[in-house]
Amino acid sequence: MTSIASVPQTARQLRACLVCSLVKHSDQFRREGCDNCESFLQLKFHPERLSECTTTSFDGYEKQIHLLLFVIIN
Image (tube, rainbow, N blue to C red; front, side, top):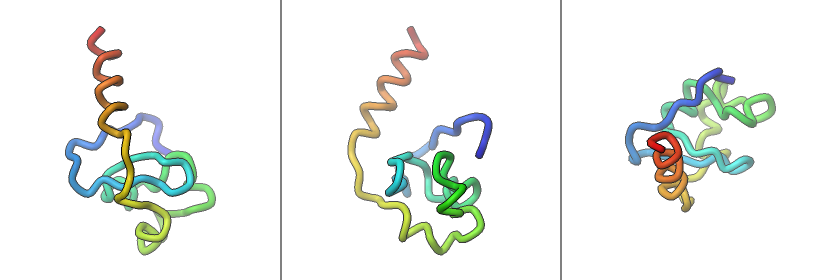
């Protein structure tokens, strides 16, 4: 698990964990695994599981980013 949350810089190739719904760039899942579920999904050590354990079909991410930016700015 990483100590600092990393925010994806682009909306392309974003994926959501099917277990906890964490949204990250596909490269981040390959490099770091899932911040919440890595202990049992082990995406970091088995990148072929990326398509089995994550999905490109999700919604609500944009609203969360806008809320995060609002909190940071204010």
